[in-house]
Length: 153
Image 1: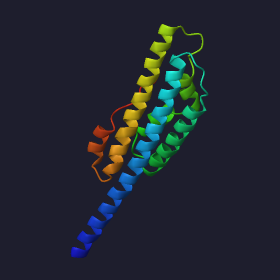
Image 2: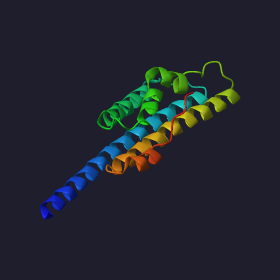
Image 3: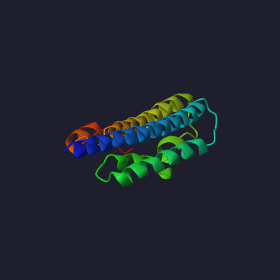
Image 4: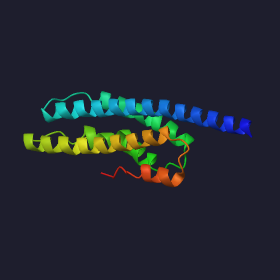
């Protein structure tokens, strides 16, 4: 009986440690995406025309990590909307596009809309990271933790 208890606690501790490492990496990638999108939107708000590659690269790296999470945890249904929001065509639509021929007030409104979309993605990434830190949480509690959805545009 003692051996089973030791095995259980060892496996649980290993799962928690693995989850924390995954969560740290996911949060880092989420911060990089948010920073790239914030830089891009800030420059566009000022009327500059920065290259969109940093936003696409950060979004792609974050999407790859989320794909890995989704592959190992197929029952986590809230990862899919974030992956859809990070798809290159959706990123073009929600973050990169829609800036041309905007006046100053319209650029400010566009910046606000872009950052709202980026914050929703960041909140979902944070929820997924928190769930990774608690690997054996019952599914009902995990559902409440991950219930934030990224609404369609």
